[in-house]
Image: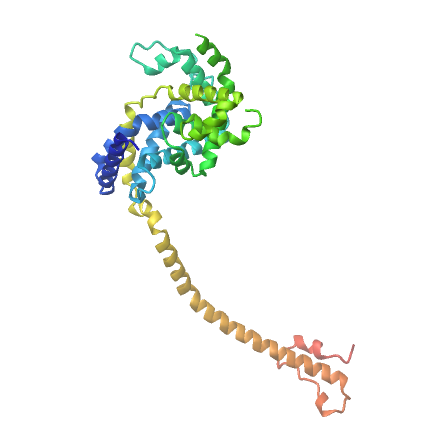
Length: 201
Length: 160
């Protein structure tokens, strides 16, 4: 672990101790520190915009409710992403059992709006969509199964180690490596043409 | 990767910079070398995906949910910790309720066993009455229970 990583862990440990003493201000700091990472992860696991915020809020509520039982054996980040992963998988299972309806605002079913309304505010997502490669990668990641997507996102976008992912997802280390391999292999196939094109440029 | 599928875990570690020893194989295997290059490119592309910024309403939503859930009855909030104690209490209550009933059932069982023994004795006497000679003192026919007319036909075997 880097020195910065150790500082972050020490700060988390201090905040957790304060939360365990029912210090709500400390929990506010935790939410503020992790809200973008958790939301970003959940948003890719649960593509519907409104649902992603709902799930992300629930992650923090569950974390607060369970923080008395957090014993520090897993890193706090790992523990938080474990809660997030469980909630995302639950939501995904619920969605797959629910009769499918077509939203008028999101007819594609993947969060892309039918008509992109003019928005003059600074919008990072809009900039992302203008970047063709990012949009292609985003769609390819979205097509992975939940199991593969979880491992890929935790490793490549959230910087969790193989060991931390094994703890967060409750699978053996070998399964983490194997799923990561399969996820990247599927992306390699899906993005092969784009990679050749972009490399040529 | 032809024939090298068995190395997939080591290949993955090599792509992520965790297994330098696999470099010896990559140096002599063209397909693995290409796979490493492409998988590293995939990793870079995924890692370059932008962070989705959380909506401003997220933190406030968490505070509202926590405030509303704190109003839950304490017993619901503490339920996970209360389960073992509740199980012991339920077992104790069940024992208190069941013990007097067990006593009553034991008395009923004893009465039923007595009645069964009486019936067996009667049955044995009826059998003896029809096996032994009629003048045998042992073969004296059993008397029907007193005042019971419904038993009269049962013991009136002469007409059969």
